[in-house]
Amino acid sequence: MLGQGVLRECLVDPGVIQVQTVGRTARGVQHAKLRELVLNDLSHYESLGAQLSGFDACFFCLGMTSSGMTEENYERVTYGITMAAAEMLSRLNPQMTFIYVSGAGTDSSERGRTMWARVKGKTENALLRLAFKAAYMFRPGIIEPLHGAKSKTPLYNVFYTLGKPLFPLIRFAFPDQILTTEQIGRAMLAVARHGFPRQILETKDIRAAAKI
Image (cartoon, rainbow, N blue to C red; front, side, top):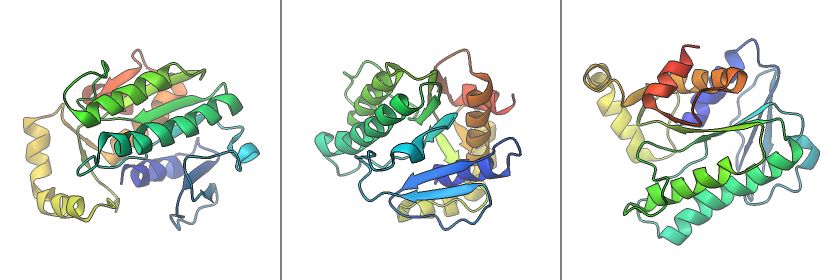
């Protein structure tokens, strides 16, 4: 869902020359500056080689719920797939800015009680050690989908549909807990272009970056 929102912001931004997506399936979006690459196994990027070279930024939005998963399986996807992509990109594009979508409550110590937060923290820490020009960790809380963005998890879509009338109230009561897909996409573009004082951005930081 977030990837859809970020993709839209990249495509409507006149300063973005080319956008390339990598995923298991094509989004089917038609746009002059969009190129879609389909990769069945997201743990291996060697076959793409030159197709991943020459980019200024990577917005890594892949994610999944940890519900019903063992820590081993969740780490294999969340840490394993992320690092496979990031390690390849850091070798091909040392001047790249890498932005990773983590989540509010991520555990940088990697030792907390919450499984998903530990794994996300491990992933963040590993990304920050790679040889990118810059790396930033985005930790959004509640995300409001805009412009037709939809989650691949049916239960989430039910929540967003039923909860849509409440978003203005939630935004008023908890301004540091909610962001739109549009705000996050704009913030990513701004941080890629101008940087940010902190490498880990919480919700209020993402909101501030979106206004740059």
